[in-house]
Image (cartoon, rainbow, N blue to C red; front, side, top):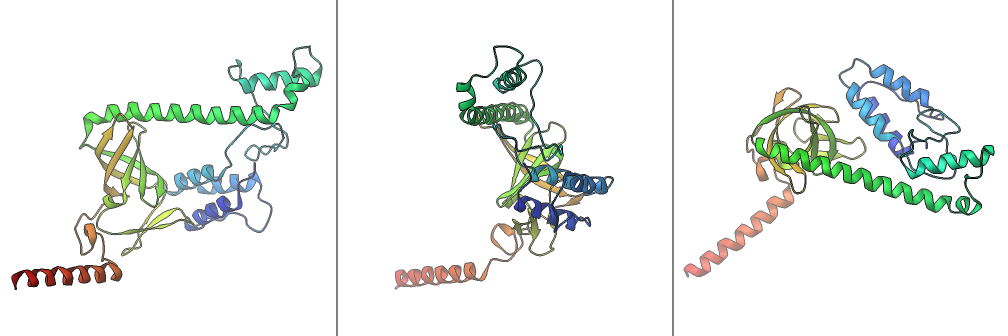
Length: 276
């Protein structure tokens, strides 16, 4: 289906930050996105634009209703694989048999009445299958990388969240998490609208597709979790100095300073009472 307004607005923000524009104030068509991707070719931000465009698309699902296909600009759309290896393929083939009168083994009236429930079921099982495949891959990669803890790897930012960034390693394709505390001395604020992290002191931005160098801190084969430490950001070393704030990342907020002072005063009074 057509991308949601929220996702398109986020894509416009990314495009604008890259010096490009995405049509606004008119009905968005596939050609507008193709134009944006064409303009981004050869730019440093091309990877960011491609990933952001992909993530703005609505995830596919099965339905007896025809919602068209926005990405392919088709008003009528269905698909199946060959050879037939999924139940969804069988449904489509049987529907073709029924609609064209090619035989007696098409969809029955009972099958047609249950199509909504059937579509929901196979959509759910496909999601479950994809998650199982992803978890298996993550665990194999973590098992392989477990022997290389402490090594440095090149990669690119593949995801951004309030708690840190995800990095896809070039060598293996593994995705690992760089927790917020491992981003260096400077504190980064999360801009949810644009999907970027912004440095509180330098205003430096961390966005999708940015090149990084990281050190493998942990790889857990049982869970598939990979934890990384940021070494370089876009070719520049990350400042690991402790600074003035908690965990060495910027100045602590005034509220934290006030709480620390109150706690310090209480401790001081306790010590004085004990001495008396």
